[in-house]
Length: 535
Ligand SMILES: [Zn+2]
Image (spheres, rainbow, N blue to C red):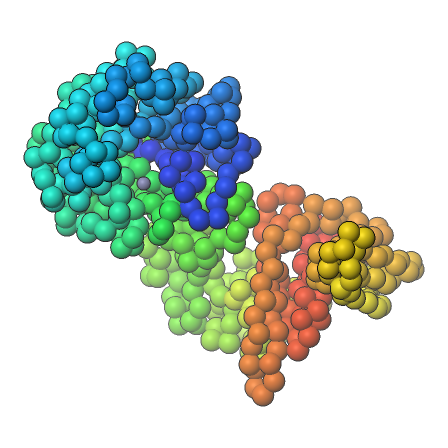
């Protein structure tokens, strides 16, 4: 990615903590916000928009914190209200006093909104933009202006929309950011309109803020760049209200790895930090307590997964045959899925990846493939459960010790009226385990039968207890399948250990508790194998 010509600097502005916080079901705590800011800062994002100081207690507290960030920490708020002076607008005064490196104002630039929503004149709105930019400059802040509804505004009244952009630039705004607030603008329109703006405001002062309502927020951001914009706003994983904002993760992948961009532009994300991209994306999902999008470009679990045998054998000869970039560059990994469609190549490659060497013509490989096919026919899906596949393979090669035996378990679910008269459902599990010569009995209560069973299983494994203390279940998914004539339940469990390593295990049975038990057992045994626990 080194080129002879000096590359132009392109600035990334993250608004996960402000616009991303508008997402349905997302409610960041102060601790979440600080953790996300640290992730973004580590990646090398230039600006982090923290939120709206004065608007809610979390944001007010966030801005009061001592932060040690390399990025320009930015406060967001409105330009001065109509009919007031800057000094006489309490909202603006609070914003100017916030402990921030930069201030991003939002202003209306669509004449219709100025008249109907602000109920003021077009001239007063321009004066409000100028006054607010000047007041923040006077406070020593870097200033950005988010031009709300800019593209719709431009279509309705281009002269007025341009006048707003020009006013902010003339009065010293570092960036004039064109917002596709409703997210309905198409890439060719964005490119044409941004070109018109860069004729009156230099492109190295123009930014883009795209929403994903036509699933083109990333494309729209790149279109704006082609037209001269040098500042891109977005969020981690495309978080944001409705269909989300431009996904910074995908943008970073494109800007760093597509020669058309990488050779002409430089961003604050170094090649080393690019390898943190997958981790950053998944960390956000962890903070949000939700499963990651397996199909996310660049960073998804399936982004570099190949299923069909014929593709897999080509990939083994040369990965470039079916991959647009190398997965390691973004911290992801190649995955050759083992499934009933898989050939010997997938199985061999997967075995090699986990450090098991077997000869190509070893009869055990053919037998393993047969077992995978038989089990998939009754509902197993090993492509989604890498750890269960690895255990199956190791067992067939005689490499998994019998660490312990669950000799019996009992799970019950009881609904009753509690002491304060509420109807409650409680679950309890009792597990009997033989470890070495010992028989251990553990009981636990849980929020559901599977949770109770999990807690009881992991409560006391005797001499193995220290190996599993960092084990955590991070996701639990259930599907009812119709395999043959009977319905069966498939359970997938995702686990994580103290090193942040993740794996997925599977269980299939007509009984949901039994399917969950299989997946839980695989997860524990996998952790013991991985930790090198003695037999
Ligand atoms: Zn927005």
